[in-house]
Length: 93
Image (cartoon, rainbow, N blue to C red; front, side, top):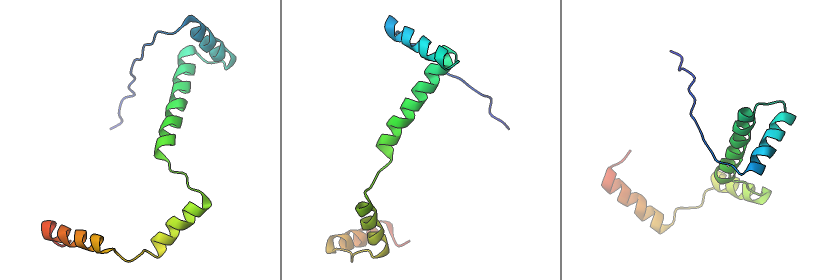
């Protein structure tokens, strides 16, 4: 069954000059003020989230990750001990 389209309300108090600028920008783009503000806020939110969730690596960083995946190093004694302890606590998979 299809979910009904829902909306939420956002209210904000703005300095007069900001409101004037937003109205002008919306008018230039042929949008309503609400449509302009929602689109601009959504784009800014997406950029902010992307900056925190996407890891960008240099070519060398990418090469090092690929090398570690393709040719992983031998487990260290501490890692072997941790794996053994995990098996003791939770059993074999």
